[in-house]
Length: 547
Image (cartoon, helix red, strand yellow):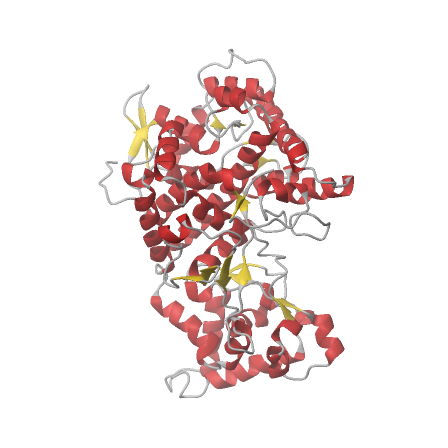
């Protein structure tokens, strides 16, 4: 079965083990259908911005990733542990007023009022005499409520901010209402003094380990033999610069790019978030972030398949380019969310291809990732490519279904276990996430097929072409095959038919990808030099790109 990274013993011998499910054994612990696209990035950034340890070896709290020496000398049987901040006061201040009434416990309301009264004190928040204190507090509350990312229908503490500042990225926190009612707690100090009795931080219900898995994929790729990484990236046609294909340079650049993303938010917003969380009242942060003995509360990461380092290397390059692009910070967050979702889909397919089909045959027709996504035009006017795309999507789901049932990952699971694997971690997860980002339409009903929308295309251009650079249109289509397995033009779609298991079509004509050129042109990322020759450009760099 797949070898785990980090090199830990899998918990797969009993039904209650975290790794008993066959899909988890194949894909790692874990991609999960209930985790939203936004929460994949939030969890990834939560680990990057938290203090970390590998066994007993600390990772500098100022570094998003462990240094190369730590990655390349990872001790056996040691997980990656991180120390996430809970930020309960900040969430209470921002989200309680907009939360459902039935989710507000009396102790929450009491502490919320205490925070507001404290803020009105001159030694806490200086407010000009000409300003209404209530209006100032309401403005602050609306500011942070406006930075909400996900969880609007959840209890206030289970909601999350956009990860635009490291001072706003917080651990998953669930309110144990039943326990609170049973215990009859009366004050805020009662519930924070026994924090883990009344709140849960380790259920992984929303931050469900998908971001952990993505983070571990980056670590797994960067710890590989530098020569192996360089050769594979070059042979696969990923389109890397020498600096991007060099492990040490890629690692350094990715560290710097992550830090720059965390610092892109105005410093005042981060300082305000820190002040609201621990500057008004510090006891809550101490009770939630530390044990009674004064040790930081830690979370242990899961694992990813070691053989998936190839997808991890592509993901690292794409993240670097999106982080380096000169774009609006909020738009960057949106594109990074899509990049995380695409990496999840790519990981499911690439790993399934290793265990569900003949890899040698696949590489001849599907490229380095061993699978293909056959795209149809967004409007669905080309009925032939639309039918090919539908059959291709069905073949992909069947491949994931069969890979989970490979004998090397079967360990006495029942039909019920496989049903859960299919629904939560397998081919239905693939379909769910692909529909969430618009890669598959329609969202409901029959006839699901692959398409692109503007955001997906923008993310793919920024991920495949470095900021400020340009490539020929034909080269761009090759990059889409190498990075994502996308088949767009007549030749690639014809080969995708072979991969799907049908005869290759040679009568598609030469205009199957005209819609892609139109989308690129409308987005300002296409330079037409003649009727037959065009360039695709990533205009979000420091280089001067002609109009």
